[in-house]
Image (cartoon, rainbow, N blue to C red; front, side, top):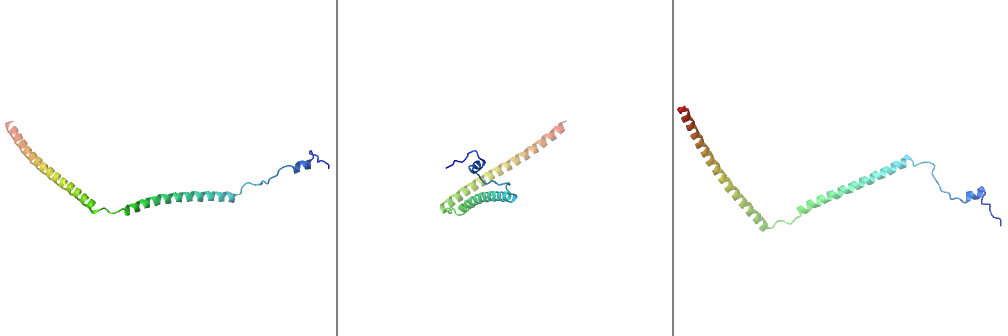
Length: 125
């Protein structure tokens, strides 16, 4: 059997590996389609994040609304504390009003004395 000449052009053409290559770059519609898909994916991720945050806030509000009611004993304790605080405030206001009226009376007396002293000084001059 005759051997093929390895230096012949036809032998070199048949022993190479060939692959299909495009002669043109990607078309504009394909690029736009890819950009649109990327934008849709980004919007979907943003919407999922917003939904997660919103649902977390809503669940906190629902937990606060669904909390067990305060017992009657706790309500009575809170009421007693509020009454004590109110009594303390009333007593403090009374003391402050008494001090203010005493101070006003003292100021009035001092002004009267000052006016008397000024008249005496003016008479002596």
